[in-house]
Image 1 (cartoon, rainbow, N blue to C red):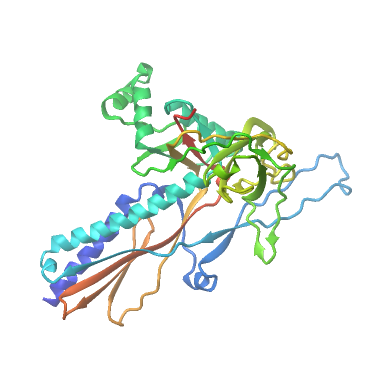
Image 2: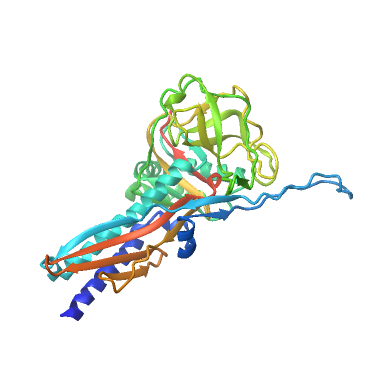
Length: 408
């Protein structure tokens, strides 16, 4: 009987492991990292990763001894783990007589944790991605191509691209394709089965996840309070500087209505190509990360108007108009380049031989899982804890974006 019980528990854990991979649609396209547990414990579950180093070129025939030298700025960004996400449930001795019920419980736990990973990742990208494509009217096939163009114009987009569409906008694209006879079988699939092929060079996925970017409210008259820009540095005090963001001081009677996630442009501040620094002719888009409702907005990206890390044509001028883009509450669609969005995974250390039975596994997708089980013979109940530990990070926010449709 003991061997039969153990086999049932192992089958439940196997179902749990399989189900996580099946349910994590969005996180399959995120880049995975697995920092060392000992280092994470000593760093209080926060560590720093380096960003790409950039330098400037000097044009001169021969002697460049008098030329300005490029500063080596060792940029790094913080990765901070969430508290572990858990599913805790119990099975009675009666319920455990049915192996199918135990397997179904394992699947349900896995589904919930997998959905949590996808939801947090989707929400993080939706709130922090700095490339914003605003559409007046319904989402169409062409808007996906516009998103790719936005990346390419900034010097990105040559690597693996992924786009995740909410159900409403996915249906709108299917309708758009269904009306395009010249696309042949693609139009037929779109018309008959709401099936959308890859858009531009994006691998396109439909997701049940939905993040509604709320309308900004009344913010008319918001302006930049004094000329402002940002100079990248390696350190701020004793910790690495997060050069992806800065504090923008604004003024206006309606700044109390700003919110986390709000997207906006600044008059006269245009995005540049990251390599040749040429003017794209597109206003740089920004997001509010914190400080909402105050005059001191923490925004991304930082406004860098000169040097190797230049990302805009000019500083934010004194009195420059701040124009918000999310004018109607609607669900967003997210996209990113390979490596821009990352999942770091970890695991708590549950020792075996101290009461609970502990089982560990790693899914085919690379998600480390742990299940601990403890049976109380007096109550006739088994307590089961499933957990995952992760950090969802948009490491390169200028290589990730959102499309918001049906705006005004």
